[in-house]
Image (tube, rainbow, N blue to C red; front, side, top):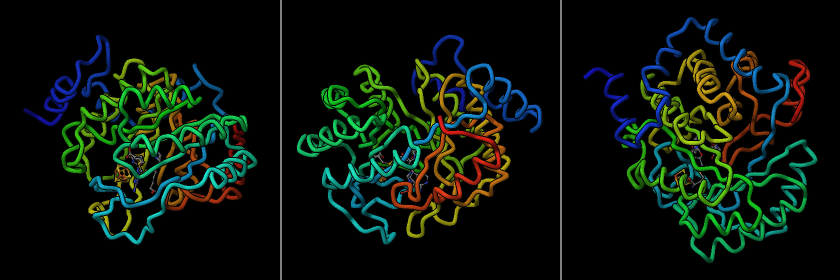
Length: 328
Ligand code: SAM
Ligand code: DTB
Ligand code: SF4
């Protein structure tokens, strides 16, 4: 079986693809287009559904940092890797509110709270529900990423006013086992199903630049596009290599391949917000500009992602001015 056929098979095995859904072979065919043709097509798709000069801004806050029991090979917060990230217990409500007010003042429309958990315990969830209520009352959209959820936990978050839940598939099913062993692909799909069932909007994407093949990148995009409905928000992260994590030292992805991934996500998920996510600090401005041309219409703004750096607000403002982009 060649690479593409086996990737197609694994999409089918992992969950029944919906009829007329994207096959990995079709996504691979997009990747194989001449760069200019691919970007032109992505920009055409983009303009059918969005204002091409508007970009949605989300700000992240790590509300509970480090000491995570999981073994995600990319992650500086896994307790088992020695990355120098200091553990920090759940933040106080007032600290979260201050950060949310600052994010709003900086132009963010959505505030995303991240916790280094395998999943929340009930005693952890209650203070997070408070945070959701308080952040929402500031007039911000709310998003949380807390790991795996049980059905009742997704419902409690929905009742507290949570708008989005972020839970990434991270990569294609066939490459997943190389990166994470402490939870499976189906665990992730199950959490995503519970989030949908609870009536929350889904933020789901992945990471590229982890040493995966193009077929695995196509496999990730096909999985995301075949979620039914597709996620409202699709973060595409370029691996931030953190010393101490197993993936530190991986051959970086060529920038054209990152831009292609954005374009392919845009074409296969025409009405989703595609977020140019982690890795922007290391990305030259012309590459970011090409990502916007390829259909990215969302970013993380603010100096920090969860534990790693992100371009300063001033730098992003200057870039937006040069490209005549305005926040949504
Ligand atoms: N612990 C929760 C979980 O894993 O679901 C929520 C937080 S976790 C840090 C959220 C996402 O951040 C991961 O799924 C992964 O896609 C992304 N991420 C983590 N470390 C990263 C890195 N070094 N580079 C790029 N993305 C990363
Ligand atoms: C997502 O897809 N990327 C964000 C957010 N969802 C939670 C996280 C990026 C984390 C990058 C590494 C860090 O700062 O720790
Ligand atoms: Fe833990 Fe999430 Fe990091 Fe995995 S990505 S180690 S679950 S914080």
